[in-house]
Amino acid sequence: MESRLRDVWTGIEQLREKLAATAQLTGPDHPPPLEALCDEVLDMLGPGDRDDDIALLAARFDGIAPSDVAYWFLEPEDAAPGRARRLARRTLSRWGMEELSDSVELLVSEVVTNAVRYATRPVTLRLLRTDVLRCEVGDDVPQLPRLRQARATDEGGRGLYLVNRLARRWGATRLSTGKVVWFELNRG
Image (cartoon, rainbow, N blue to C red; front, side, top):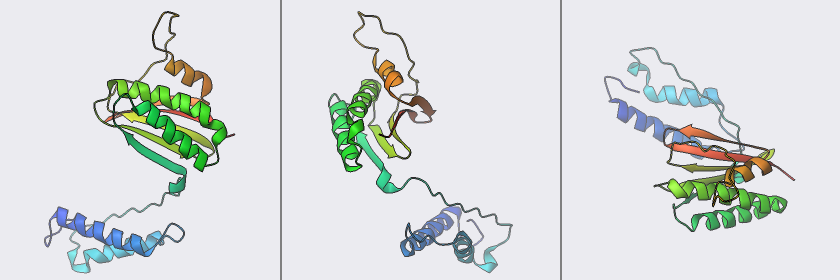
């Protein structure tokens, strides 16, 4: 994107504008052919602008439809687990998955409670409807949770035990910005 005629940031901005303009002409049901998209980008550079080899890679991700994803930011406060339960219940109702509401509300509440206990920034909650229901809770704390056996006299420590017992699968992924704890439930 850098040449004798423009600095790299100007080139990146021109590329962003070209891709945004192309995206407005297309839609999810009729995306442009990748080769034509690459030609558009290369044409933007102009034939006299190429002092060096150019490598351009374009890929299309036919992933999860936006209508099958719900995403929220929750402030790290005591009210967050309740808000997360309500948001999850409404989303499951909209998706026709009410039979999962009780389990999802319980598990989302447990995972969000753990996240807001230590987070200093907003926590994320994401629900994904695929062949399973996947729930993800992200926070800014890098330490991964660990499953432990709570004693009868312990005040807490049972949240991940519940996730482990009720979820089809669960896990945690460390990110450069913290972590994501996720679980999956079979669709009814």
